Length: 639
Image (cartoon, rainbow, N blue to C red; front, side):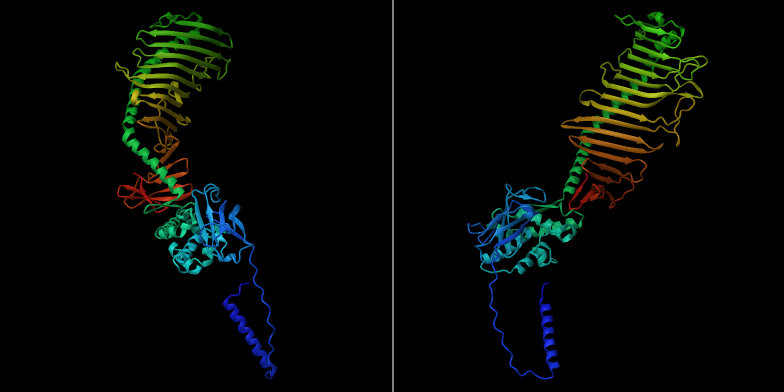
């Protein structure tokens, strides 16, 4: 129990009252003289033989500590010393020191020997700290207190520890703190104390002002009074704005105090990436991208103008082979069987091999190397494997066609082409031959050039198409329903060349009209997902644009754009059905920005910046500028 002055006073009054009451109850006044007790011999208080201490910034392991008996801030041979262990603990042997509690303590931390348990890493600079006489905690706060006392003594005066603490409280803006709090171990029980979190944040950041030479501490800190005030205020403001006290870093750069929160630094790096992409797109990518679009459009025109003709050529020769299979005359096929065609130079034109036909099997290969009178060339290898079953509703028939095809002026060509039709219905009994329900997989290397004489390259790469044939009520041939279209390769040439991949996928959950067209309605629309990847190399800038569009309704869908350069990336997402036009931008480091682009006016809060689930910034529209205010009090604009 601690006996305070009020406790002692109350106890004394109680004893007096007891004595008075006792005298009254005796009925008469005592006449005998009071006896004088014999004096009790006094024993001097023993001098401590050990002094246990803690050293902290975070707790410091490997810091050198000594008792500064002659108060010269330098370790002398007769001064007890030791090195801190885990938890910043050290015990000094003070056997030969009379009244060790009368002397200040000094701790020296070095990059070579001292570990800060906050980071589990060596301290980032050499520095010294101190604490007033009689204290057993050494940390940056006690260092400020002892520096006030040391400065007063160096000037020939004195300063009590209470007055030194009052000065430091005012300096740091901690006017409500108690003497005990200012001298305590702020790390002990910090998790449940906002004050300890605050004072620890201040203490961690004070160390940048501490010199390695303890003799310079008081003078150095006296020069930094204004900086100390600004530093403490900046930390208080940053915490009030939502900053994490354990992550706040304050840097004094000349006359400027800069608060750095790791989460804000991460957010600013993300905004810088966002800004870099915006500048590159505006200054250097727009024109090549437009050229890329022109090349794609031109390639589409060439395909539209020529692909039907090429498919007719392929269909011509396939129909001849199909008829020969039905007539049982496949092995009799010759170039003459194909009207309007001749053999390509130095080839046989038509070769039939390994052809077998029985009651249950049709197998064989037909090789065609033909040139049409228009100059179009068709090179196909037809591999048929069919096993019709009498009266079945679906026979087993797979047809593989490989080869190449090109038009006369070489503006479009397909090489290494392969088309596989699986589960084709052959004619069996009363069941007519058809493709209904069969699956189609087509791959080819495609090269498309302009129709001009110089043959400017428009596209060169791989094409894949997949889907199935469906039966229609008003069309006996049915229709092909694609579920996959993919192009991957080079669009353009030279400086205007882009490596790109376009992939369009669908579940096929839509219906054709009777004539084979698709009339889209609110309940019948192509549920496509398109992915476009483009490699960008402009000047010294190399990156990739990855665009994904996922259709969700007839008119709306989701858009994701990934912008990558080096090892950094930004992902932009939007939902066209969102009336606010909110864009969500994020990166792989966990930073995310939301930004409203519709129905906003000057002064509106239009977005926020997050690191994980923690909000670190608010975006306000100021005129036409998007201004971000971060938790550390700093500002910047997006563009």
